[in-house]
Image (cartoon, rainbow, N blue to C red):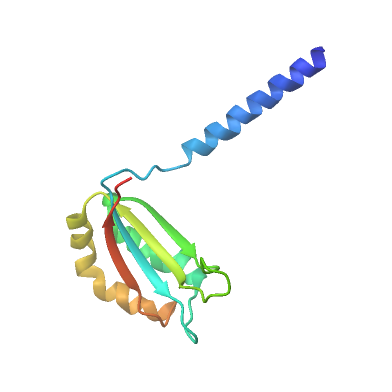
Length: 135
């Protein structure tokens, strides 16, 4: 009986610790933030170097954005939403920022540097969508 009580307490404490740490490491995306999605469409013969994108390109852009940046994500396309259909995007990079005008002010003087770096990781022209988080 005592052993069961101790084991139950240990399991409960472990769960609280794990879930508590998980929540602390998560950045909440809040309503009103601006989301910039840079989508790289899949097409036959097109390439994408995820390692370069993750370790060089995105960190460079992050430095340009400074304190306006809340969070960024990098996604690697693995399948279409419809079985047996081609992959729609090879990759998607997303920035969540507080202010669109600050984002534009940070990107404008660096757009040449950003675009010239494309050749280091892809031969695709990205599609960019700027949106507002509503929920």
